[in-house]
Image (cartoon, rainbow, N blue to C red; front, side):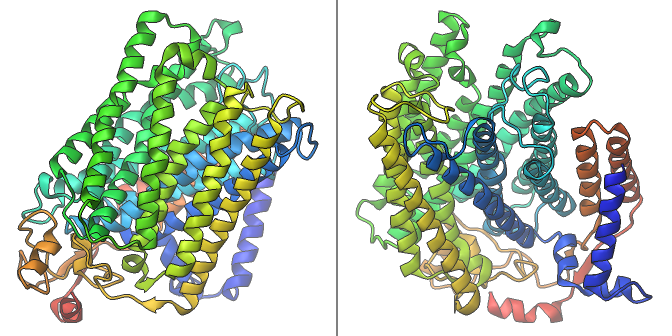
Length: 636
């Protein structure tokens, strides 16, 4: 409690110094500050940018962790980073990349683009949208300050019980894991619900389900997966928190608990999580390949069917992570067959992307390079996934570097390349400027070659018997060359990321202005100015078919037909309560990490008071009037 009071006093002093001191005009100055604008914003486009910034920050941290891991494994018997610190790096790299980078950066794209693609002026619940971001960021912050206060978690990104319980992890490290992910997970869950409601209820007139762009379709299925996958994780984290803080015995075997239950709970969430990550990337590739091939997406309806089927099967296969647990031949066989079945809808999608490009007028922009590079990488990841679905083979591959290679081919080959493709594709729409294509291509080639050089040799490391999660190995077992190549590949990937950072900084300083439709796009977001106005559409558009904007351009129209007369537009007001509520969750989490029950409940009290204030808040937003919209109409 004393530490918390000291931190609050220091924060108040800093706030006073940075804002010119406390006086009668203090609150007015704060409200005029740019930082206040971003803290209180409920604009889905700004929240999308916040997700991109937050994900970028955690990507830098997790990338540095991976670099340190690979430097340690560069040579046999290396002593650069040993033992517990290596375990912490390994745990934090996996946890940060999966929970704080991969999904949040895709949430950034979804937040900005999905309302534009369906012709909406905002998401369904702007307040919840803001709360979702701040909870995600607070959870990530709580997890990562473990490096500064008290030691980072070191039980692996899956935190298997009983290793993660007090007997084997007595420090606060796993507490950070449990509470950080709990807070971030609540944010993800409410954001997923928000996207579901938005897509169901806020589509423009004529935008039927079978006219939705593929990125919106994949966002829809992903949000449904979040709705069903995150509650089991939330329940599991609560149970582990109670085992650690209050000495219950849900998973503690010496108290009658069952450690295998944690594995079931984790993978009931964990396997759909793979599809939660990769499905939006599929949507990005579909939109990018269609635009830069100048063709309608081949087999649109089968693509939609494949997305839904992959989402469904994604829930049916979690046990393939547990073939070695000993669940018996019948359970193993059922889940092996279900796993292999996913290859069918995935194959449909790959062939449809190839047929879309066939005969098209392809432009190899940076976004298109990432999209085509993905197909090769993801097919390799899919093939090794089928190999791991064969139970006898999995018994050999399990816990070797073969699994590490497969996993990274799926996640980096699918999700990261997908994000980069979408980032270059939609950057002009989000910021109104172009990223430099020359630096973009340097980024692609360095990252892509580095990616294959890093992870392709790891298949052989696994086949040669190198276990995962080890911090060293002996010379003379044929592991030296592949480990060296793998580390060199990591340096190449890092160089590629530096090209991206340079490109972004260069563009921010002197970027070329982008028009509303810079790529000759097909979907609705390209029909308005870049960046979009606050209200997105001065008049909600009337949708007349698939690829709505392309359809209008083919008929000689330079704007979408309106579905309503020009009139006042209702907009939500900025709100500081999501930030305050998140602050309460953060304080509470920090208190429970250090077993300070009074601080934990103090934070929860802040949350409850904020909920009470919100319940009685009477803010009906504001209206933009037709005169203010004339410029927007002319620009759209």
